[in-house]
Image: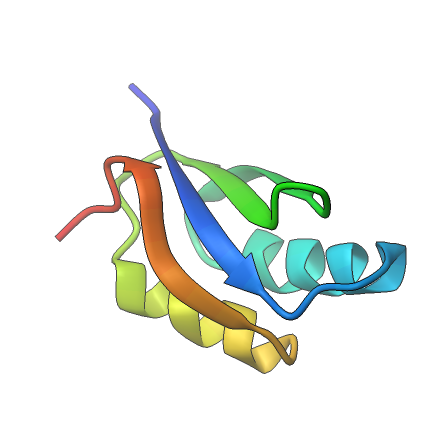
Length: 77
C-alpha cells in the first residue's frame, strides 16, 4: 500500500526552487516519489507509510521554503 499527500509550498519562484524542494523531500525516509509543481505551489508526496506533516515541513524548510500544510491526502499522524 502507498500513501499520497499534497502539501502547499510557499516561496518557490523558479525551476531551481522546484529541484531544491524535490531533493529535500526525496531524501525523507520512506518517500517513494515526489512531484513539485511551481504553478500550483504544491508538492505531491508518495510514500510506503504515512509521513508526519512536521517531517515534510522540516524538509521544505531545509530547502529554504515554507510548507503551510496538507492540501489533500493522508499526511500521517
